[in-house]
Image (cartoon, helix red, strand yellow):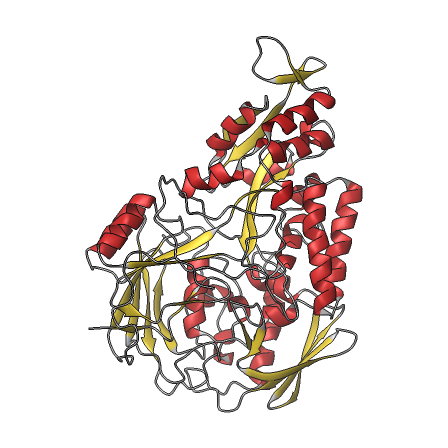
Length: 563
């Protein structure tokens, strides 16, 4: 679905997107498709025959200093995953409009009745950029390498959760490969469409994980990775002879562009200035553009595209462990009515920004809006708190019970968004929110020691199964956060719903389970969604053929430049 939206009003910024992993679905359908936002202008070559040649200059948010890595299986950095899509292909692809999984390097697949075996038939004639054939042996080399790294990386390899339960990869014949799981993993098919399971030449696995992370990799995509210099930039070149694109691409042959040059620009305003002055062709911010920047982009003749990032919305998770205020179920239910999500979206991001409707962004397959349970109603919040014994004494601003003030603590990091606004909204309901700044290095210990009441979390993957890597303790990246966010009975219920969804081979049954999951998360006060996470791109009007993938990444195979 494509939508046109008006320029919004007042801006701030949203923090970084995506630092964890997830599991997805067998064949997925979404009830809400991602929108595309247009500024005043549009592509200058729209409706014309594509022209080959030219260099596309693209500016990204700065590189990840702590984890500079462009290896598909290892990286979680959205900007790198977006580039990977253009030099490394995957077994399948995912339609961003419907969520359906479609053939790509695999022309067909079969899933055993018990859900333990996935057998893929590979496309003929595919080669990696170094000339090696993309056959069953190459696929096995990739997945054996993935499994080794999942075991040895200590949980830092982002793709590890995509292959949970993978026991072996077998070459049936040159064009047939079979994956065997120790337990059903219905999300695996969707996983094969992601950039994190994109395939590399077997020669790449002769390199160390660190060497791959620094760009010593070869894919089968329409571009080759020429150079990756951490914190400086990336360069890609068109590969000749490419003729196996995803069916979701219009271009069936070589890429139109000669080269892609990527730079890292820290300041949002500088990045926008470079776009409107014509120094770059695409500005790809991590934070949504401010309204002023969107206005500048439109006035310059450039245009905007946007799409919510699929996966877990920008969400606060409670600490319900004993001794913390949010152990009280009534306080958690009151919070839903004390937070004004519509005002949050409009104030932080602009009047046209989508209002979050639940634990997931609306581009996530099986998304089921819970908006009716998230209505702003401070009077109702007050009634719930009064009934629970939390009263506002005459002359006091905050509620108390048995002489103890209703105070919540939220640690702030560089990724925290709009905390002061939430603080003000909760104050109006008599709830004190204390904001404490912590460094990235301090945050794990704060969570592990339970020194908080609310903490934010989010990440990107086009499937609701992603959330189990936050909330299911056995799988979670932060086991303390998962344990603290829910009481034992609720935790068991949530884990059971995820298990049933992941083990089910029936799409209709999975949809019902994920719908129940989303209702249960709100009914039990386990997640407090604050905003959708929207990926924007500012695009010079000479750029044509721009396309978002299902992961809301950029696909450059169809892109061409009007001279």
